[in-house]
Length: 383
Image 1 (cartoon, one colour):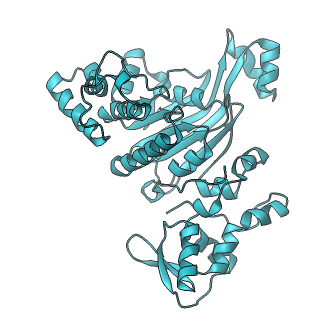
Image 2: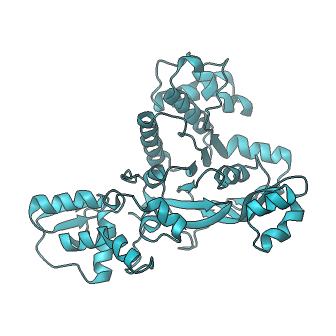
Image 3: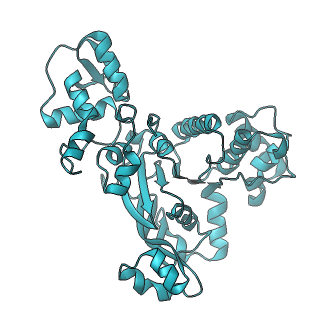
C-alpha cells in the first residue's frame, strides 16, 4: 500500500466535538456484542481481560464488540476500518439496530435508539437512517427507478411523487437512460450507484455504508469513492463508512476509527492516524502510506510553526491550504523558493519552505528511531 489517495473530506464543515457545545449527531457508548445462547455469562470474562479466542474456546460464544464508544458529528464522514473479524460490520449494524448490542447505549440526535419499540424503530429506519450494503441488495425483479424509489414506496409516498424523486436521484448518480433497466443488465458499479441513490432518495440524516465498494473492481471502486465524496460535499450527511482498505479510509474519512478483535484501538483524523499511530497494530497499517499524499500544506505549516522551522523568506508562489504536501513541494521546486499557503477565502495562513515541508514528510522516521513515541507537535485535522 505505497500510495494513499489524497483525502477529499472537508472537516472545516464538521463541528469539532466538545467545541462550542456541539453535541454529537450519533453517539454510541460502551457497546458490547456477544453472539451465543447466553451472552450475559461472557461479560465477566471480558471484564477480566480474557480475549475473544479464549472466550470462544471456553464458552462457545463469539465476541463481536467489546466496550466500543464513538461520537460522530453532524455532517461528518466517519470511517470504521479493520481486518476481517475486527467487528466493523457488527458495529454498523448495531447503529441502526439490525443487531442489538448486548450492553451499551446508542443515541441519534438525543433519541435513545435502544429504548425504541419496533414501530418507532421502523420509522427511524424509514426516515432518518439509510444503508448501503456491500452486495448491492437490489430487488432483481424491479427496474432501476423502482429500486431507487423503494424506500419512498415503503413510506407510502404516492407513485407519481416517488417516480419524480427517484428519477432525480437516478440523474444525480449518473444513470440517466437506465431508469427501466433491471439490475442484471447493469455493471457492478452501476448497481452500486442504484444502491447509493436508493439510500439517499428518502433524504436520511445518517447514511451507513457497510463495505459498499469492496465488491467492485479497483477502477470502478475509485470512481464510486469520488462519487460519494462529490455527493457528500453537496449534501453534508452524517456518514458512517465501513472498510478494510486504508487507502479508502484516508481518501474519504474526516476521522477514522480502527478496530481490532472487537475493540477500538484508535480514533483520529487521517493525519493523526498516519503520524501518531496508537500502537504497533495501527503502525503496521500506515507504515507504507505515502505521507506526501495524505498530509496537507496546512498540516506542514502548523508543524513548521510549532517546531520553529518556518522561515520569513519572500514566497515565490502560492498553494491552497488543501493542497497535498507533494503538491506543495512541487510548487516550491517549480518556483525555486517558499510558497504562500492560503485559505479558501484568500487569507494568507503562512509561508512554507522546503525544510519545513520535508521535516513534516520525514517525521515518521524520527518517531520510529525514538521508539515510536511522538516527537513533534500533533498535526491538526485537515482544513
